[in-house]
Amino acid sequence: MVLAAVAAAALGQLAWQRRRVPGALPLALSALLVAAWCGLTAVESTTKTAAFIFLFINLETICQSVLPVLWLLVVLELTGSRPRLRRAQVWLFVIPVVTLALATVNNLPAATDLAGPGILVNVSPWFAVQEAYPGLLLAAGGVLLARAWLRAAPMQRAPLALLAA
Image (cartoon, rainbow, N blue to C red; front, side, top):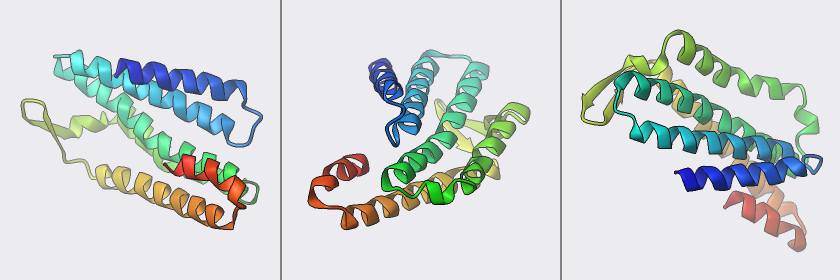
């Protein structure tokens, strides 16, 4: 996990240096968020105290809820769809902000029970929303990428296919 965090941080720094290129800024933020997620997971795996495990799960939940939004913003920029949706983009962050509020105020993973050694069972009603929303964003991004790939000239298909992979 530490190696993945370092690689993601390096990609984030590289994309940040090219942030004026379409899609680079959300890609840089995504890579840095992935680095944080990997780092948190690495620290969580070494922690034995339940309180710290729940803290790291809360922080990982925040990363998990924001990443699909940033990925969709990368896709929107690369496919040229972002200018048409400039005002609507703020609404993409509603679910992650609510998740952040629940994670900090209500201790979202505290609604989970330790079912056994290392097994977490989530009983929070927000869990369904938190799981469905990223799937919808990833599906929307996949459809946009597929549509852009089909419409693109053969020389322009490689970057879109790389992003889809």
